[in-house]
Length: 174
Image (cartoon, rainbow, N blue to C red; front, top):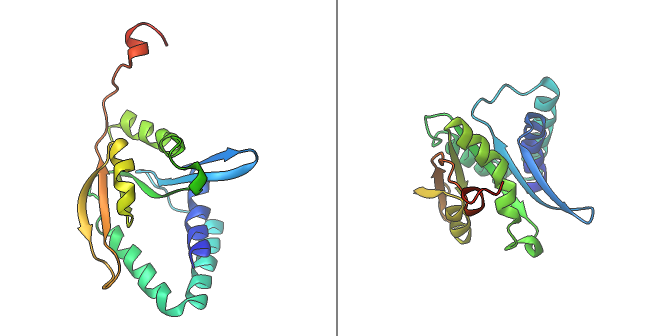
């Protein structure tokens, strides 16, 4: 169910220029996909492709798709009221994890958020990702149980960070 579901998201986000990817040796190993705070309406072609992918998910997984789309619609209501960058998802191949690539995939959007004084927001169903997100300035804001019997989902926010001089820049190296 997830490939067509994520294709729905990707069609829209690639057009926004808010998808960052990491490639090694010609192999895609990581992607971070964000929605910016100044989100403009999707083009007609993106809406058509997204609707086709959503229809495929509904046809192939009629019972599970209703819960999936319902949960995501419910998450939309939990977003902060203030303008924010929304991390829709980040994913890395297992052999690429723990090498700093995830941080580098987040950096461009975090820098945009910091420059604009804008907070960042995400949801994660994975407790093991909390430490990673905390290293990148996020803090847990809520623990949710959107689907009875399913694991919890946590919301996390990151306020804009002030630029801090590094040791190199403080010593005159740029």
